[in-house]
Structures are given as C-alpha cells and as structure tokens.
Image 1 (cartoon, rainbow over the protein chains, first blue to last red):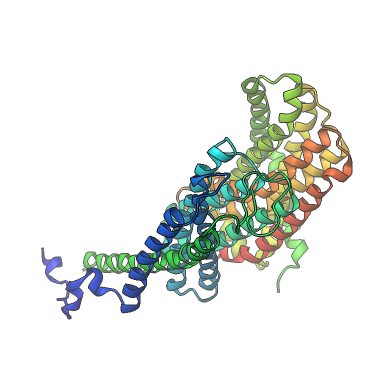
Image 2: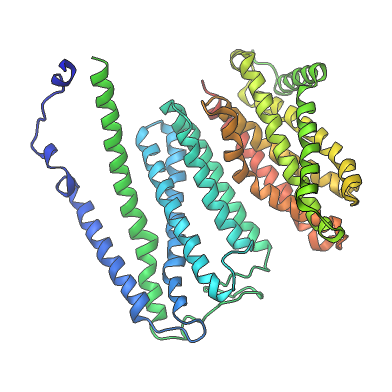
Length: 256
Length: 225
C-alpha cells in the first residue's frame, strides 16, 4: 500500500493522453500514409491490374510476395546494423532497434513463405519443395526464429543484448551465404521476374504481357518493402521503450 | 606478459585431450549416440538398396551434427562445472587462444566419431564410404560445425536454458555447411564425375573460412564476463 503511494504524480497531462495523441506527429502521418498506401496497392494489385493469361488470378499474389521479401531484408538489415552498433557502443537503443528489426523481419519473411506456398500449389502442383531458393527462405525464417528463442532464454538483460547481437551477425551471414549458394545452383524451379529465369523455372510471366502489371508491381514494391517495415519497426521500438520504462518503474517501486 | 597464442591454445587442447583420454566420457557418449542413431535410421527408413544409396549421406551428416552437439554441450558443461571458464579468463592468454584451443579439441572429438562412423556405415548400409574424398568432406564439414559450435556453445553454457538451447541456435547456422556436405557426399557416393560436384567442397572450404574468421572476431564479445 505505502509503496503504491510513493509513485511520483504524473507531471504533465499529456502522459495520461496515451494512444494516438502520444505518437510523434511524423509517426502519425507515416502510419496513416502506410495504411492508405497498403489499401491502394492492394486494390491496384488484386483488382485493377489485368489477369494473367497463363496463371489466372493467383499470379496477383506476386505483388505482395516479392516486395515483402525485400521488406524482410530491410528489416533484417536494420537488425544487423543495430546488433553491430550495440556491440560497439553498448547503447540500449541499438539493441531495441535490432529487436524491432528481427521481429518485423520474421513476420514479413513468414508472409513471404506463406504467399509463395499459396502461389505454388496451383502452379507447381505442390505446396513446398526443397528447391534452393525456398530452402534459403526457410533457413532465413528458422535462423531468426532461433534468434528470438535465444533472446527469450537469457534472463540477464546485458547478456541477452550482447548474445543476440553476436547471433544476429551470424544470422545475416547465414542468410547471405545461402543466397549465394543459389547462384551456384542454377537448377532452381523458382522463376525470376527481373532478369533471365533459370532453365527449369516454372511459372514465369512477362512484366509487359498484361495491362497494369508493371504499374501494380511498381506501386506495391515501395509499400511492402519500405513503408510497412519502417512503420512496424517504429511502433515496435516505441512499444519496447514503454515496456522497459514499465520494468524500470516496477524495479523502483519494489525496491522501496 | 601474455603467453604466446599457439602455446596457450595447444595447452588448452592438450588439457582437453588428456582429460578425455583418462575419462573417455565424451567419445563414449558421442560414439554410442552415433551408433544408435545409425541403427535407428536403418530401422526407421527400412531402406532398400537404391534408396539406401541416396539416403546414406543424409544419415551420416545428421548423425555427425547431432553427435557434435552432444560433444559440445558436454565439453563446455565440464568447463563450467569445474570453474575452468573463470580460470581461463583470468589467465594471461588472449581470448582467441581460448577459442582456438577449445575449437581444436572439439574438432578432434567429433572427427574421431566421424571416422568411426565410416566403416560402421559401410558395413551396415553396404555403401563405399571408405574413400579419400569422403574423409576430406568429413574434415571440412566437421571443421565448420566445430567452429560455430564452439562459439555458440560458449554462449549457451552461460544461459539458464543451457544444453537445450544449443541445437536450436546451432542448426540454422550449420545449415549451409550441412547443405554443401550432404550434396558433395551424395555426388561422391554416386560416382559422379568430379567436375560435377567439385564446386561443393570448394564452397564448403569458403564457408569454413568465413565462419572461422567471424567466430574469431566475435568470440571476445561472448566471453566477456
């Protein structure tokens, strides 16, 4: 009882406001812009763009599938930058950035794998195959899931941040190496839209073949590869900062 | 005055080898596990002769990976139990020397198990595993596992989850090594012309070098306390 009464009174009324009012203005604009951009991009991709002659409507999943792969990479790249900077400066904000990058990246990578799988079922007649590119996508998801498990398994916060930073460097090296291995294995079944497709590729389509395809891709790309990961990561960072503030206050109250 | 690098590293390796020779704890555990694993695969897969040829390299490498995880866990756990980790950190040797010493020790233990597996599987699966190229691949692959395994095991042994965490965080990072090793072994066992598959051992060597460099650079961050 007495411990509760010792919490300092809220100094500014703004702290009670919470919710959207507490967001920085740029974040408010960014979030609204992202939501609108996602809706427009989805409409253009799923409704407006022409239907592919060979593949039918399932080809539309490509407008999400490919850009979101790059989005995952943007997030993972941020995570490794955060990891390296944390090891160099030991400032907690870098580890928060890395954590946001890993969580958002993993979500986007899983969406990439699932959308790819949905596309593959009618086109390749299978949900999954251990083709080099799919294998590397699976490895990417597994590595970062393992990173999150590592973070959860360590109690000491300083140790957790340090080990997570080291492991995230391994994670990105693993992902890059697996991607390079693909270049050496040209017999992948996975089509390449930009550049020549490997000889065994099934399910390719030309960018100019159908009306609106190029524009739909051009619109969806920055939305899923840039806007969505950046907005999500920003929100995750704010959430993490709030959670650490709560932990700090808890420790303060319990130690009185 | 710091002890020279190789002197320090080899003295750590000698300590591990000597302790192992006296207790034979690691090779017994790893060896028995390897034997059981090979038998279980044999029963579970009910391989006919053709399928066996395809599956053998997979069985070999999966067994090697899990045996190496067992060995790494025990090796680091013994260090921690006997308080060696703190003693090593206080000694006037560089951190990389500790890493190198543990790495060579872990490599040797896993290699022994791997080399024992070759004649064992040749007999049980009736495939010609006793070839020079298979031994080369074993050396390269186990070097990769030992490198990342030593660093990651040093990490996990300091956490509360300890032994259960190592397979989870080591296997994804070990996948490129595993990929290259299995592909190369399969090609060797199928007597494919060397030009077809020589890229895989080359790739494996490059991966080993990359991981070795990375681990040497990052080890000091893992063993700070």
